[in-house]
Image (tube, rainbow, N blue to C red; front, side, top):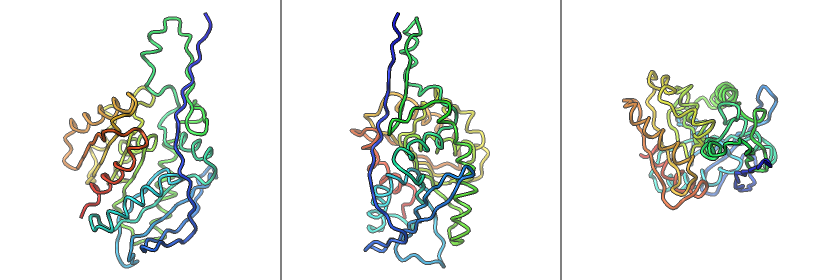
Length: 301
């Protein structure tokens, strides 16, 4: 029988932007850009945005947001509205992205945000089970046509180490008035990485905003109560806002609902947790609502 090849392309949206070094908006928010390097010599850009009336004599919480390559405007825009309305406290934002083209960025996030080498997305098991001849081959590509395989994925442990010892240490050494109350914002694979971080180093970030996390990764491998043992032993006071869009694919819905159930079953006294399904939104249109609501939940005055 002729082999059937099924190609799945995960389409990523790109929002292009220009951002100079040391830029300051008319509203008083200043952004400074820095370059940092991983052990593999990959070059990353850090976009550090300070609140209005920033003072080096005052302490500030920080929010590290992944995928700054295209999430900068929507993240900072949402915060600006909330901050100007005096709904949220002053926070310093640190955007992180590989320095390069759209293809470079997509390729690197596939490696950095995934906790293990690619086997499957947990989306097509029923299809494969129904095919007794096992003649269906599935190819999965992400934005810019990058193919997921063993060689292009599974670097979350290295990126987490780089984030802690390369990025955060750099930022906090340069700005000693940033306090140790850190946040992390991640979407899709970034949300997957956020849960990986919560499970493996729960002391690193205390405020998490995780949107449409790709938790079906490798047959839902992170969706297990036992993976949260370090969180159960943690003394950190953690706030977590988790959401996804009502029109997302089945894998996103199922995996996020399962994690929601696990978080409820853990009954952690040190965890403030909000789970929200955003109706009439998909994997990308959910961002504006989720980021706004998540920032309000984490930093409300």
